[in-house]
Length: 279
Length: 96
Image (cartoon, rainbow over all chains, first blue to last red; front, top):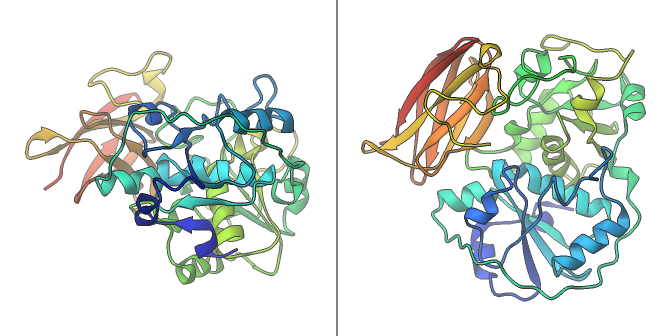
């Protein structure tokens, strides 16, 4: 992959609003954002209601994913353009998730909803009607998803990148600062993890920094591109943003997103935890 | 996520355990909607929220000095604010 293959800008989206081969999909942390206004023609996917198993902590299964995309009128051949708020956190998460189930033609709108709004581009409230499809998903691609045992085994061996803010990395905060801090798990980070906040990969307007800036960011933090990498955050959405940077924009092989992330790791019994600003 | 209500907190949040920073973004004296970023003492990005339709925002920070940066179409502005546990720091950010 490369930047051109995985990103489109707002001008491109505006020029393709009536292109029948393009399906715009909005995914937000604030799941009410779409209802207040969205890019014309975009369909909504709710990261919590649509993408999470309602009982156990996991993804929806393959059959449920097929049902979801079919109900949204998305075909296997469609070119999906994802966008969302919070600098595309949840849009990047959905990108990674859709890739996991094998969707091939998919891109992110660079800058997401924020850039679109800061440019004062049009948002509408009309919900498009798309005829249902017969979407067929592939088996989950475990080469891009890490589980807890892989993270424990990666300590001191692979690149572990903690993409949360420095105060979450050190243990001062347990959650992003726009969420209440009352959580039960321990604070800190996986030993030997490098702290490269996701936000360093983005400009203020939410667009991704240049390839050269991105490469320098991770190299300067001590990430060895010769090794495999696991990225994590609190619940796997910000680290999906970093996975997108490393695996899709910079074309690094063997990068996984650990979606269990700190809410799982910080609650495990007996695993090592490091606090402070790291080594 | 939600816009802030001056002086109040969402149900279920224990104000005694939180260091709240909240306020409103204005342009020309009038509330304006956009985005607000929270930067830590070292200028590092910590969080970002969209404002309410009337420019209100809220963060749950930690005690210390923070910068709030408002982003609205065509402009941005920073304000420094101190947060303390059990207190609500009110801040108004004016964008030129």
